[in-house]
Length: 113
Length: 467
Image (tube, rainbow over all chains, first blue to last red; front, side, top):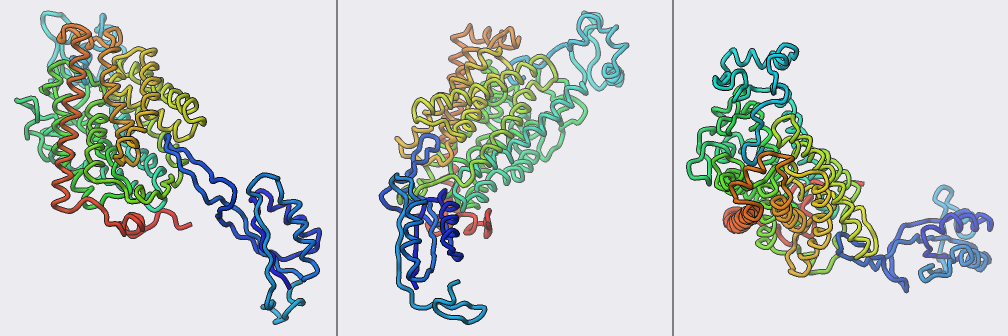
């Protein structure tokens, strides 16, 4: 089992959701986050006073998949979340210790689907 | 009406053929009965049937009543305007600054400051004590010291003026937002209403006031309301010091500019009552003031947006709201004295000027949180001086009197500048001293911890947004 964490542009969420559904991936946790990377911040101007907010808003997706699905998911997200501009986000993967379905007590790979 | 002889001596309806009009108008019939009852003096002998003093006119009274309601609306509108611009942790404390003025100043006005402002004055600087505790304010007869007498009862005049007294200290609160201790604010504004507002209102608007006597023109409060609050705002924010967040370089972002736009829109509506109501009658001067006010707001918005687009690249919603308010501030002293084109000119000029004036605080490093100095101070002073330049006797006959008593246009402009300097200096020095005095009694500055947590939760124990 692997946990995939992807930081994506907010306006690409629907496309990523559709791509994951195509791959039959049914579970995902989405969080609104703020972060910084290579992209410049956003400049606000209020009565001529300018403030640059270096933290920009993104969605963080957390998806836990079977090990054999990892490459397909990475490929799908990379394809649909990309705009080509700086600030498209990143994908991180982590080996996962355990998964438990709370309703039934199932563990491991069977708990995922 | 705030200048010389602005209250119309004769009503249009009673003009050339009073007898014919008297027979057909119900309103005029009321007037006759009032005359017969001896409520006001009757017809002068030498002029036949032409009245020299005018009885209470119900239409005029009703208009000033409606205008009073509109001006009252401006204070909650100001609360919205200011409330939207502060950080979310301070929205309630900021709105409270305006709302508490509706409580405190209303009571102080009737108990004390109406008398100090409009009671008979022998020295031209402060009124007497005759109206203390609301005594002696007639709900039937006109305010007694204008020549000639007005056509509305003294009671509604007092109520209308009360609304101005409420909003003026509330305007100052924009400069000290996000860092002032609540008890300190209450004490400071109460003292300010008594020791700064009342004298200045007396100088400019009391028929015995020294600036009034010099023929200074201030139709609806460019000096009394806007310049006085702007100069006091400068003193208060200097005396209080900068917000700690500025030293930490934390971004200070408005919590909700939609609230600010709503407030600005309601201020525009209320300001029609503020300026057109200041004619104290439903006449040609009220209509001129209405048109001039509306056009200046429109032109102020256009002026600010153009400057913003050219200078900063993007026209902003906050700029639109600020520009219309700047235009309104600029036209306030001029409203009942200028023709439509000069009104547009004043709006455009003041709107554009204030777009840059709000940058002064960054260069000079005083923390005027919501730009009271840049908009009300600079805009009020500029409008007052432009009033001297553009006031027209064709719009308002009292301008002719002011020109005469000042020996022409240059003299009038000089008197306007004198008014600006006198009111500005008095308000600035007085407010600085009052803040220092308040500091000794209650303290004026919220603690570092209170400022960090936000004044809403730390001073009031509540939050504006629990979303």
